[in-house]
Length: 212
Image 1 (cartoon, helix red, strand yellow):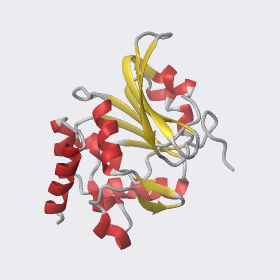
Image 2: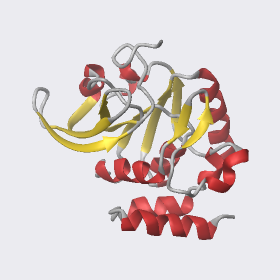
Image 3: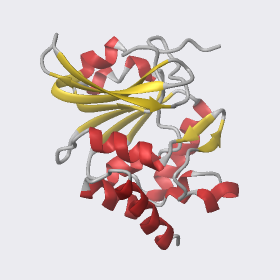
């Protein structure tokens, strides 16, 4: 089902600059329509963000692909994802053979996505909690990906990133963010590249936006 739509989406991603073959193969294999509400399933392979309830969205496919490519994944990288949401980003990473740890702060979404992972046989470690604090027990991580916009870079997450590891996080105000691609050179030294003009839902938590 939707094989032709997935192939067309991959062509769109290639035209937009996604060149990592492993990322593109994952998009061919992971069924995005399983991660959106049935009522909008026909739009699952459009290159747009879609609502999943509770004022949350499943990210635009290009954004997922861009962030995944920016991680420069090595084989079996250990990854922390902040903001499980629909589960699609985690599914892409798992399909690529990564060891995925993911945190969701909205309990109803957490329960729904946990059930979906079980149904689809997606093997990731998922917990309910404040993602801005990370997952200390399983640290350090080779890569960290944050799928919500933060007012600043959470220090707890930087501390849980391994040396030579990469974190990708959108930082800015609630209307627009700059994607920061951070390479940890040492415990005190970082290389940061900025890519402007992204828009995510707010990262809520002790080291993000405070809940309203």
